Image: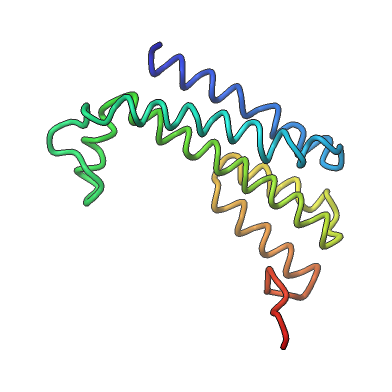
Length: 149
């Protein structure tokens, strides 16, 4: 299967998860299974398969030590597709976390929707926006309550 086809399929696979996070955030299957387990797991399997299939195929001069060596590494379309799948899986997982955390913190879903859109498009930017919204609403910077002895 071509890297382009794998890329296109994986881009399509994440859409139901994002749609559910935006439109049906409180449906029991949205967070319980689809957006936090099934889709990231399937993408993870594809990632592992792509990564394993390319172990002996790293381009000469490629690596992770500099932007130049990274560009050489990503000249392999299967490695580039694996990297993109990494983003797709983790961004969806982060979006699901944002929705779940917002529900626990009683943050209006209308405030979370722009965060989700940015998380989908520009991962960390959406997460930063969610943290800002969370702080404004809850007045709490901590994500977990410290344990007191």
